[in-house]
Length: 242
Image (cartoon, rainbow, N blue to C red; front, side, top):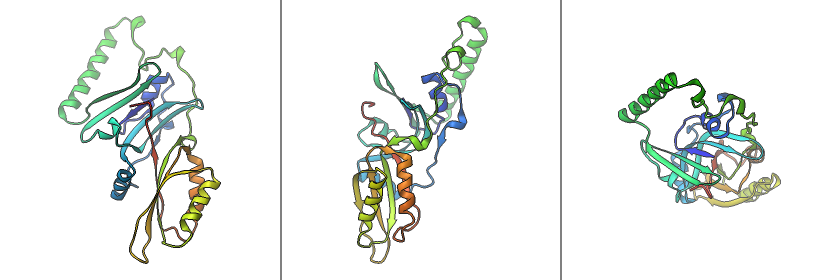
């Protein structure tokens, strides 16, 4: 699979990596508008950093193509890509994980990318048609019609931040509802608040199917002790890929 520290579509990555036709509409995308500064602090407290990743991964069920904010362990190299720098992390069957790092913004990096594209176009125009490298790196007759995995079928850990009233039994009710939907917890952080005001409850789950998390939260949100909407972010541990 390939993970990018940017908001580029993972569709082209999937086509180049897995030989599937381009399908931009199938890529799940999510921005950063729901993230608060407190989420950065809570993620750090849990040992993670939040990065906006584009992910392309082939699984037994299909191909994942998604772009969204993601919690990744702070010990990973990808977690330390900052500023105008971008990185691409690729995991291969034989080579394992490799990380490609460099500037992704600014006048010179942009100009370099444009010139490289123009050179590629010129080379294709002058190359023997029988010896040209296909645009998707696969000959049209060798493209795979692999299924695209719906985002609801994604399996990964989840970061959940709830704003709840400080009442007896709240945490027990939440954990019981999660357990009823086969969602187990790895970490729980409950912050102290001002008396009479809602408090932040941060949950980190084990790997679980997304539709199970959403089903559990839809029930939890209906409870009177929940204030506002929960913040839900996906996590990637990148084990074996760093």
